[in-house]
Length: 411
Ligand SMILES: [Ca+2]
Ligand SMILES: [Ca+2]
Ligand SMILES: [Ca+2]
Image 1 (tube, rainbow, N blue to C red):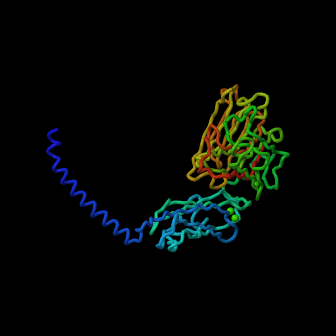
Image 2 (cartoon, protein in one colour):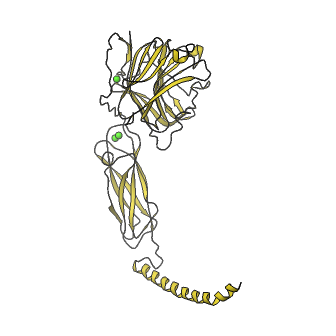
Image 3 (tube, helix red, strand yellow):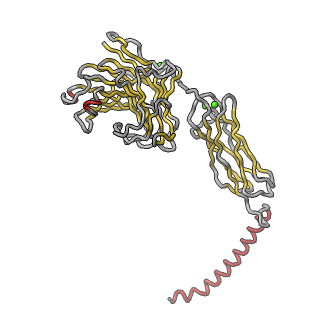
């Protein structure tokens, strides 16, 4: 209490000093504003930019016009610097980059347009984006500093990109080729393959809470000797994604042999491509008693890791044996070879001819070993589900798996 009384006089002196100082400061600020022409009620205008979504064009460059907009005209020339940056689209390959390009809006006007050149091609591509960064505003304030350009696909031809990696021989000593699909036709050979449509329900037999609806072929393409499955972000059958799943059930079933499947897999969070087989007796003995051989599975968010797995057992849950292989590069970069050496009481799985997984009758404890029975092929690209989780904004759609061939050799 006594301390408060004694400090009153000192405080009042301080207050007067402060008042004088602030008056001087206000005077200085006003003078500055007048000097830069922002006085007399003219406020600094706010500058914004519209993001642009446009098709890419084919042959030559396409101009993407970005409009710089002021919320009010200025009596001064307004300028900013524009710099582009890579999103999923890349400088030079997909668009012509600019670095600190000065763009001006003349005094008294409220907008201007600047162009970014986008490189056209004739390849079917996922929507790609690049960034427009705005800096160094003169006579304006920035409503935002980063905007996007979206390059929309306008092509139907797939970029197959087969560099010849990881091919396999057409003959093996002591074996003959008993069936293959080289996917060299213009349509899927439905004497060998079925489209398995829907979402696995009403029995929900696919059981992984997947997010895709499998269409009867709408998501399958044939081009240049490849079978292409396209996973799309589109609504169908109550699902938000569509894809394709094909099987050889009741058409081509095999017991034992050497199997080679060469494919290029997709990547991206929540994308789940699979090359696999199920025991042909699934309809009578059910899963997992029928057995499952996963020749290749990959989770798109871990594109450097492939899995090979067998499921078996009396059920209802499966017993499994699984191995994975981690590569220094994403499996989506080039074609890879996924193979099986399958004989009585033993199955071996290979990635690019490297042995990854071996399953023997002894491993199953004998009784529940289903791998001496006929199996059929399944090829699909699933979206979401218990194992991969859901896709997100980083997942490229459409997303593609390209299969070069499925070959079966037997003794
Ligand atoms: Ca194009
Ligand atoms: Ca294109
Ligand atoms: Ca082929």
